[in-house]
Amino acid sequence: MLTSIFFPFLFSVRLALSSPSFSGPWDKYCNAPHVNASHYQLPEEGTELVHLTVMMRHHKRTPTALVPNERGINDGIPWDCSGVSLFKYDGGGARLSHSVFTPPDHPFARQMWAGNCEVGQLTTGGFHDSKAHGMDLWELYHGRLGFLRLVDPSEIGVRTTYIDRTKQVASGVLAGMDPSSAKRPWAVHAQPQLIDSLAPSYTCSRADELLAEMLAAPFWQDILKNNSAVIEHMNSVLGTTNSTEWTTTFTYYQDVVAARICNGHPLPCNGSGDCVSEEDADEIFELGNLEFDYIWHLAEYAEPYNQLTFGVMFSELADALEEPKHPLALYVAHDTSMVRVAAGLGIFPIRWPRLGSEFAIEIWSDNVKPAAGLRAHLTEEESVRSEACRDTRSDS
Ligand SMILES: *[C@@H]1O[C@H](CO)[C@@H](O)[C@H](O)[C@H]1NC(C)=O
Ligand SMILES: *[C@@H]1O[C@H](CO)[C@@H](O)[C@H](O)[C@H]1NC(C)=O
Ligand SMILES: *[C@@H]1O[C@H](CO)[C@@H](O)[C@H](O)[C@H]1NC(C)=O
Ligand SMILES: *[C@@H]1O[C@H](CO)[C@@H](O)[C@H](O)[C@H]1NC(C)=O
Image (cartoon, rainbow, N blue to C red; front, side):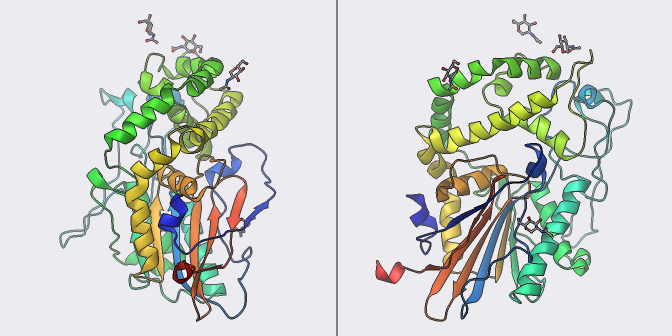
């Protein structure tokens, strides 16, 4: 059982579900609730918070799945990433950032939407949510618990993936915690893209084989067949009919729909005015959830697939929790990271991790033995696990 590998001192957790309150299925997907000062249960008296690890998914972004006529399906509406500079060079030279532009007469402009956003970039709305997220973390862990004292690299270690949007989120979270960090340089840690364990992005051919087998299995093929109507409609609107990378899972459709709904853009329409409908979007939402539950929970190879693709990160997390370097370790990651942690912890059924969803892993001490509690906000049922758990290492 993976749990015992990476959370050696967590031996029992209590799962408290509060009743979900949302109108449409996408509502809470776009900005997951996170721990905050007004909804926080203190553990028993006489205990003291000694360490906090927060792992979160980035906030709302532009799509990463682009269609052949990307400009055409956006109804002329530009994507807005103003105020979110894309990259800074801060190595002793001039500090650089860049903003994206596409001249309207660019011969390849149809491949890209209008506006000032890169593919998969945090949008202005996503940056706003990141700051609010940081503010809430600060209000709780500084204001209410007095645990964090300073927004400073000596107190907060930040690990991102190699992908820019995780750094943009980290920057928003820190500025939300303390607006004066907006003026300070801050070194975050990220591993080389080739072998980044957090995204994760290292290659593992055995894992690729297992995934291929899971997607070829009769159960998954039946899901695709049973839902061919929505798949065909999506393809005919998006112009992706003959593309196998689009049609073997729901991942790309989910991306197309989620990015638009979460950023307040209309659903895509094609040149003849046929559009992805709200019903299509809601079906894609459920099918995306089913896909994640299948790959990381129900499928025959779900567990080895997770071990192979995230084993490196589980082991890093275990080491980091064992010997924390900072009071707060903040990891900014992706749905692909969050889902693997959820599966490793056995938080089933698996749902597609929402934007801004987080695990807050707290270690409390009663001055006798350290204990750990886990507060997880991952799915649209707000699952909060919080229990002071004894360290059993010395007993077993
Ligand atoms: C605090 O968290 C609770 C539970 O997730 C949520 O219902 C509430 O809206 C949050 N409050 C704020 C101010 O974000
Ligand atoms: C697909 O549809 C058939 C016929 O309705 C049903 O019997 C089967 O359980 C469905 N398969 C899956 C995997 O949903
Ligand atoms: C898809 O492939 C079929 C068979 O090769 C072809 O007839 C059809 O035009 C293609 N559709 C699109 C949208 O490219
Ligand atoms: C738009 O979608 C409709 C139905 O889904 C399809 O029949 C039509 O060919 C598409 N038009 C274009 C320009 O792709």
